[in-house]
Amino acid sequence: MQDTETIREALLAKREELRQLDESSAADSATVELDQQKVGRLSRMDALQAQEMALATKRRREIEHGRIDAALKRLEDDAYGECLGCGEEIGEKRLALDPATPTCIDCARKGSAGE
Ligand SMILES: [Zn+2]
Image (cartoon, rainbow, N blue to C red; front, side, top):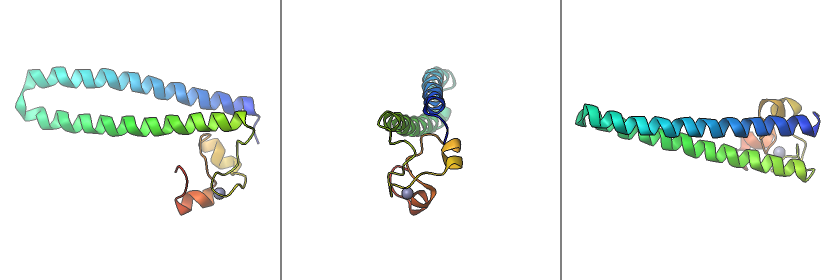
């Protein structure tokens, strides 16, 4: 398994990335409102749809943010890398792909905790 400092850095970098995405999409929705006034009713539906998509994206990011925080907490508690579903070790490759993942591949397939 990778050393915890490397994992922590990867998690913090991911969290920072999410924060920046959030900021840039906040700027995007401000743009949508301005455009709407300019082009009028026809694009109102488009603007609403875009807004809904932005909300869904924001929600996904909040969930991801929560997973990252939880993973950082597990690092501190020395429980990192243990599956929340079954307590087995999570595969190294799986953690490398997604350092915030809370479950092993088997539990993820079964659709339990947090995935
Ligand atoms: Zn498991």
